[in-house]
Structure formats: structure tokens, C-alpha cells
Picture 1 (cartoon, rainbow, N blue to C red):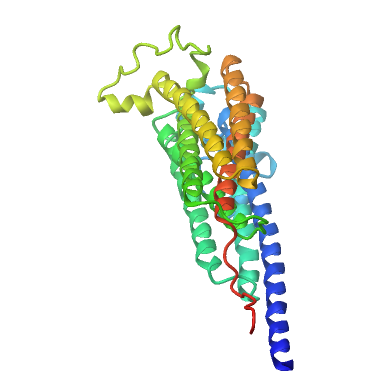
Picture 2 (spheres, rainbow, N blue to C red; picture 1 turned 90 degrees about the horizontal axis):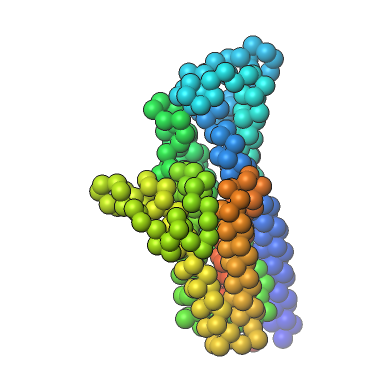
Length: 365
């Protein structure tokens, strides 16, 4: 009897330690999420201020040190003056004006480097001290690898605007933003998998619906990135009509036709609008379905809150369009996209419940 009681006490002690470790890891991942969201916002400001091409070289290590003194600043400025953006758009720009756009891009890269350390160093600590559960190890390595890939994709994006263009490719911009959102979603999914839930997981239908909704949010973010990359929000600034019609004409002027979905500002904006309506309808459908199947539960309340968030995002998007994309509203619209993505992923993980514990108290042992 005494030995059995002692054994049970040891198991409970191990579970308490596991719960504490999960709490600490969750707090760490929430900090990572805050920095990731900040990177996305600074990246949006970099795009909207035309700052993304101000640093014409990729120096993953040395590039963390900004220019010091007039000579170093002039060296950076001279490199910028060789690219088409300066020669065709910003010719005659002063050094002070160049510094303004330089700092946006430098801050974006600095934060991106910083989040790499914020992931890698605590990950090594939790791993080496035995605080990281086995199931989390491949997940965190995958997230770290995505971060390294994102750095390469970021430079691939910038490189597209250094030779023949005055801005970056909308294809590469959309890829860069979408990959950032994938990383954000992956961190959120792991963090919420370590949370403590007071309710049982939802049924499979609710879980699947929540997963599909996350996918639709990703698609809408990708479409929004295409709009940003083409500056498509600066034209057709009316709503609910676009170019005087519900379905505007001349949506497919480019051949082959599918290129219009990525290269025609009018078509890209129209598709982004239509998919926004679709996402709102799906959010309402998900809320109604979840409330019917799991009334009074946290799952149902989260689904209803998602409708509120998506509706608010739609209002922000419409206002941004009508006001011809002022930088403040543009960034708010982007911020809410990240909020909705994070909340939809949290809802999806919440419908599944927490990751199973590696240790369980088994009655009678």
C-alpha cells in the first residue's frame, strides 16, 4: 500500500512538472507570436512607404550593423542610386530622405533576425534541460527551418526589384507574406496545443469546419498580398459597386486569362472583394453550425467571436478602400488579418483540445 501511494505521488509530481514546463513554453511561444505580428506590421509599413528596396544587399550577419558616419551612409545611398526605383521614381532624393526609408527596411530585417534568436536560444534551453516534450521537438525544428527559409524568400523578393522593376514582384511579395503567416499559425497551433482546456474536444465536424476556415483565411491573406503588390487598392475606390457595377467589365484583358488573377489590378481587387464576402459567409455558417451542435460551449463562443472579428475586418477594409489606403488604415487592415488568422488557428486547436500528456495518473497504480 505504501509503495503504491509513493508511486502515485511520484507520477503526480512528474505531471506537475510537465504542467509547469508547458506553461513556460507557452509563454515563450506567445512572446514569439507578438514579435512575429510586429514583423508583419513593420513589413507592411515598409511596403507602403516604398522602403523595401533601400538595402540592396543581403548580409544575414553583418547586415545587423547599420551605417555609422557620413561615409558609410553615402556608400549605402550610392548602392541605392544604382537601382531602377531610384532612377525612375526617387531621382534627386536627399540623403535624409533615403535614411527615412532605410530605417524601415533595416528594422524589418533586424526584427526578423531577432525572432530567429528568440526561437533558437530558448528552444535549445528547453530541449537540453529536458523540458521539451518529444512530440514538440520535430514541430519546433520545423518552425525554425521555416524561419530560415523565410529569410531566403525575403531576399528573393527584394532581388526581384533590383534590376528591371521599380518595386518587388507581387508573386514574391505574396509568397513572403503567406510564409510569414504560416510560421505565425504554426507557432499559435503549438502554443494552444499546450493550453489547459476546461471542456472536452468538439466533434469531428466542428473540428473539420474550423480547419477549413483557417485555410480560407490563408487564401484571403494571399489575395490581399497580391492587392498590395499591385497597388490595386489605389484604384476603384468605391463600394459596394466597383467601376460602377456589381461585376465590373474588362476583368480579363491579359492573355492567357489566368494571368489576370495575379497581374491585373482590377481583377485582383475584385477577387479579393468577392473572397472577403465568402469568408464572412463561411464564418457565419461556422458559428450557426457550432452553436447548434455545441450550444453554450467555448467552441460556440469562439465561433461567434470570429464572426465579429471578420465583420470588423470587412468594415476596416471597406473604409481603407474608400479613403484610398492611408497608411494607418492599411496597417490596421493588415493587423486585423493577423488577429483573425491567429484566432481562427486558436479556435481550430481549441476544438481538438490540448496535446495528450506524456504522463498520466492511472487509477489503481
